[in-house]
Image (cartoon, rainbow, N blue to C red; front, side):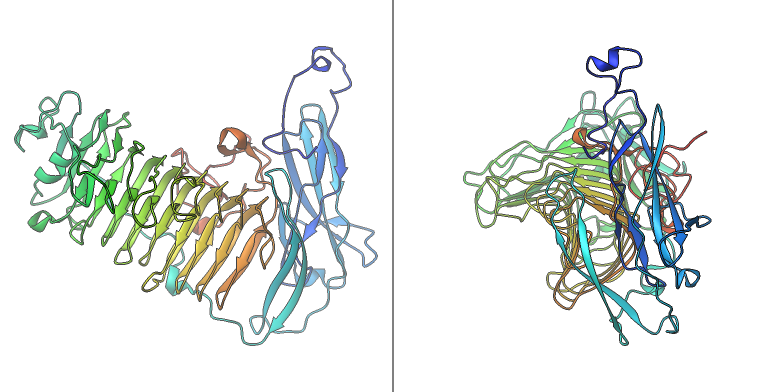
Length: 559
């Protein structure tokens, strides 16, 4: 039995009830760890955990340098992750991994077979590029590892890759936070009244009733920001016959257009989680009608932060629906929101739904701490057109995001449409059990993918198509449906470029994937394997990461 976050169990059955029963034993290895990658200087090799019995609670990794025969092995100082970058010191030697499995009764160590002899290299650094291609057996369940057979070719004219000037050396600055300077308005679905004046709505005792009334009625102060605090309740606009409608619409703001000095903060009241739903259609046959939770309708919808909402859908006959639709905005931030269950019924041309839609005229949209799941209905919508995220434009950021169980499309898709944009950053993303790939980057986009996990997606973990230019660093890809052209669930098509660094084809050890608990166990290979410059200060729980981490949650550490 392969031990995963799904398969660990404690204290069940008759044997567990008897002190000293035979099941009380240290872990037993049933299949040795397998290595992936080519053992050449400068390349990254990875290790699996092998297969184990015995209620394993954590794994520890160590790399060893051996003689050319594979014997006389000794630990390599500091090499304690699930991947290892081969150094010039390794030339003329072989390498192997050592994996220690631990449970409450003790620990057992298993070692991999050694690599082939690491060849000596005389090629100056930076003058060539190594490109890995692969054929592989496919992994069809969350408990089956992907294995690959690799070949290596060297080219003297590598394709262009994103540079530091494209992405910077760290995450870009976010919108300024509310500091107490400016004006605050209150919204309460139960106790509010939209007949209250703008002055009255500044008092918690006389709030507005709808979010739209607050968006239409706020006044920019001469100095400071605008803050709208929304209390618990379900907010859903009355339906009309318009082709496009949303419960909350930002647009045509004119002199009330937010700026960097006058940011609009639409926030859940502290301790509350208000719910926003799409309005109904009230105009006969919906045809090409669209309904959305939040709609950023034009370029005046800028410098806006939305934080702390749950956005859900009432199933209705509609052509197109989105939880958030951002058409042509700059400097927008969505933070700490859940978007769940958005589905369209079969009506009109190509019915579809997306959790978050970002249009091609948008720029600098920052998507932080979002959970997007249950998007799309393959029985009623156009096939494979409903995605967790559907993103166009340029210089967007996804950070600390879960995209899972989106069963009629991709977890995240960057689609260039009429033209691609540069400078996208995807970091600390978990994309799992999506109908197609976890992450797809199309067309002429450039993007940097870091610190992310791609797990149990039906197709690939990451797919790069068209002429897109992408680098993927310090990430885990495991148990996806296909190994892809580069192995470990990474696929490249057309004239695209996909550079891989420190990719681990290992189980991330989620706490409970079956219950969709994407926290990780203390022995997870995600721990301390992320890039510090692109790890946000806090995880999806808003707890300090404390160490560079792969995935959306920090790894538990010993006190």
